[in-house]
Image 1 (cartoon, one colour):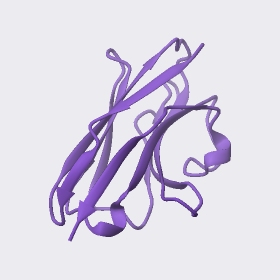
Image 2 (spheres, rainbow, N blue to C red; image 1 turned 135 degrees about the vertical axis):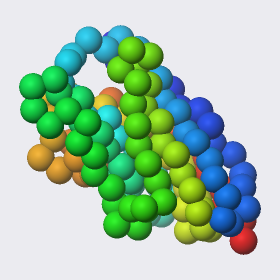
Image 3 (cartoon, rainbow, N blue to C red; image 1 turned 180 degrees about the vertical axis):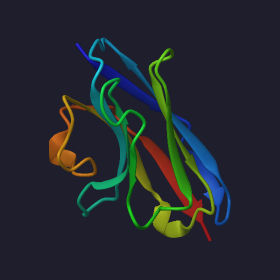
Length: 129
């Protein structure tokens, strides 16, 4: 059973930075997307960033939402089975619960939540003005 656990959320002032981390267990595939999503109450879950692991095609390719491009960086450590999200220049609009997710076998739309089967419980990020 695949299990994802996020950590690193918290409260920060606008302009600050946070680093989120997600560790995956029960995971054996060599081809998959890992992504970060975020959601605020009453709104749809939004894809933030995704990174591809595929030793044969496109390994390391990343995708970012326009709203975070240039401010957020997704990275992974395959040996540790972790994916991180470095968030900088945070604004109150970045406040949300952040989730990591994994999609095996690739994804046509890497920032679309319907592509992902396994999810973590999320970690809260609050940015104050």
